[in-house]
Length: 197
Ligand code: SF4
Image (cartoon, rainbow, N blue to C red; front, side):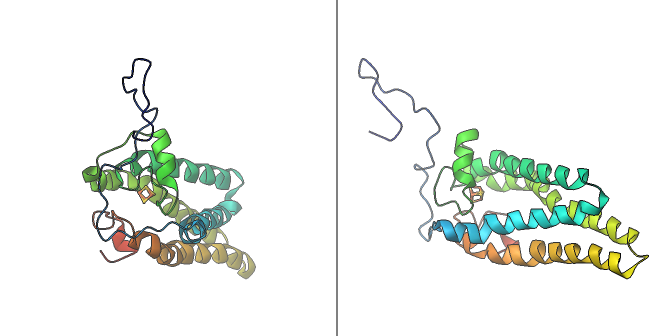
């Protein structure tokens, strides 16, 4: 009997209580799982959390409303990613997803078609990308207001530079392991930023 499928009172099969993971879609033959939790955290989740916290720091001189709103936006944008992009990934519902989002996605969104992955990615990735743009724009505003003193300029520059290093160098570099072993890497429009297809 398949996991999640039971027998009814009269012996008829009952429907599974949640979508089956993509066990019926074979993974590519060269697929290498990237499963260790510590690798997952090192490669994706902790650097991403660090990026968002530094982004909030960049916005802090504009008033406490900005960093709080920014962090809530980042949370929402990642949930949007999980709901709109992950369902068409071959790691939807699988423990091997490098970020762990794939298993969350199987709980909150119905399974999508893997061939629809590039279209879904292009249509929705901008929501997540704004999490990179907001601190850069806000940081530029803070910097422009801080030019009257060397110390305040330094306070504006440090988080802005740190955010840029994390967002445009460290995070893509650390994502190479997860993206390099992802079964969607040849179709994923974002893979060109982390790993050659
Ligand atoms: S590999 Fe990426 S797109 Fe696929 S389930 Fe995990 S987070 Fe979602």
